[in-house]
Length: 466
Image (cartoon, rainbow, N blue to C red):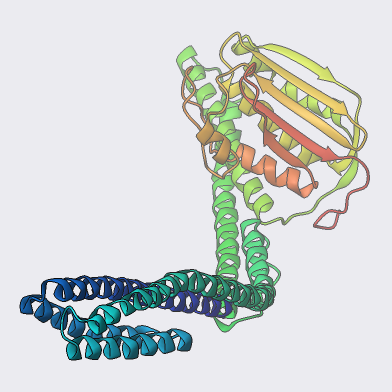
């Protein structure tokens, strides 16, 4: 519908062009034929005059026969030119020329060759030639007149096309605006619905108004939303159930290993102690993996209780660094700390999990005898935490997926990195819950560089604080 006015304008333009082309071709052909015929008329008059004069002098019958033949050709040429000539004045000149030439022919035919009457009649060819020259000149002038007519017709066509464009162009623009308004709204609704699903917001129903096909697409998206809600619930239930079922036997294993390591049940040989320590360490590691699964389940579903309190962030970071002290010392990592005194209203346990996962990621990917720098600063309206290690950093593929659940980046050149790939994903969920952002910073001078930004001041959380 938008294209219809433009197509109409195009059709009108093509029609004008074709009409002008046909008219110009016909005019050119007619002018050429008229000019050629007029010139032929002049040449035939000259030939008749030449033959008539020779006949009067020589009195040869062959010359007279040639004159008669040329006279007949002249009549045919005059009749043809009379049909081609549209100008009434030219037609009258042609009729006058034909009548006077016919009268002259009769006089030459009647009088004897060499007589005074015959010689006198031949002189009439001069006036006939002048009249034929006028006809030829008028035919040549017709070219100029046709050119003027073509220019006038082209100007009219230009004006008509301009009027069409001025009339149909705004009509097409108006239709385009109308349909854009009608279609843009449901498209915006679809885009918002897709963003909503991408952000994991499944509580609000999806409704798309507008054309039937777009509304039907909105219904399919709402069906997808319900399916995602069901899958999220099943996933959370599965993770909670599995984690709970694993914790019960794990507790017994950990308690038993602690009793063995502490030699509560009796002294151990060196080999037995080594096995007991391995059991205890792997029990602790398994406990951490289960806790990660539980935390991820709660964080991704945005469920659980949040205890909002005043948190001294610098002390929280120091506590987490102390917990990672053995791992840092074992890799002989140089630790640089620049912590400003910062107070933040949030869930202390969740914030500690965020810091813990960032420090653990840095320790895992930092090379032996490398460097980890932890910065905490208070700006005007936000709290910024930077964790930087001297490892190989994130490549392009890692940057796009580093916060995805269960995703582990490229292998560390210093050995396999143990973990579930949930640390940064959990950190992201907890940061989002606190209305903050977490991002990978590109810095060629450093390795891995992760920044957490939290808004200072009072925060309204998605869930009620307890």
